[in-house]
Amino acid sequence: MKEEVGYPFDQLPTEMFWTARGGGAGWSSICGTLPPAMAAIGLVVDTDTAMQLVDELFAWFIAHPFPEYQPHGEDYAKVAGDSTLCHVQVTKWLAETGYRQDGPERSDRCGGASADVAKFTVEMLNAYADNAFEAAHSPAAVVGECMACHGGEGFADTRGKETCTECHGNLPDPHPDGY
Ligand code: HEC
Ligand code: HEC
Image (cartoon, rainbow, N blue to C red):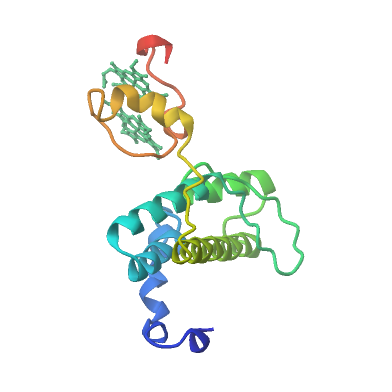
């Protein structure tokens, strides 16, 4: 594959992305499929375009049921994590399937997710190269609702596009305007 694409891409050591695994050396922080995709995007397009493509990648990622790619007919349940975090993604999948985090099934799931992310990234880049890229995904609607008060137009005490209610399930009581 590397040989097929050729120079300069065959000069990139894949080891430079090794620590993304396990959500960053096992911290279960950002899903390890994402930083390499972000780097690959940043390698070939300008910074403004890269921001748009990564935004689309993340918005697609939180809603995508992983793992789509199951090369050996495994028939694993596909679960959308509603988060870019490894912890949230993997734990929801384990809860749904009943597998262990240290089992081979979990490795299959994350391998499949890696393939899904690589495929989506390549498709986006190809569409961009053909002048046909259009963003089709957005953060969860609740983000806009919360950020109307907490974001830039409001009192600006937080930032981000992750699905707020994934973590803030129990909002302070009373929260203004019924939230
Ligand atoms: C109508 C405006 C409004 C909306 C919409 C809103 N909030 Fe708030 N929120 C506030 C105000 C005002 C406070 C109190 C001031 C503060 O602590 O920032 C607050 C406080 C909070 C706090 C801190 C509470 C604490 O313990 O101090 C969290 C967390 C929070 N909001 C999350 C959310 C989330 C998540 C959403 C969307 C589901 C949301 N808010 C929607 C106005 C809003
Ligand atoms: C991955 C989990 C997670 C997500 C997703 C998340 N938050 Fe938080 N948020 C936290 C944690 C942890 C804190 C710090 C502890 C606390 O105060 O609850 C925090 C703090 C806050 C605070 C300040 C609370 C205070 O004490 O004043 C606000 C406001 C807030 N978040 C709003 C949001 C909004 C709006 C979103 C969606 C855009 C969001 N959060 C998404 C985990 C999360």
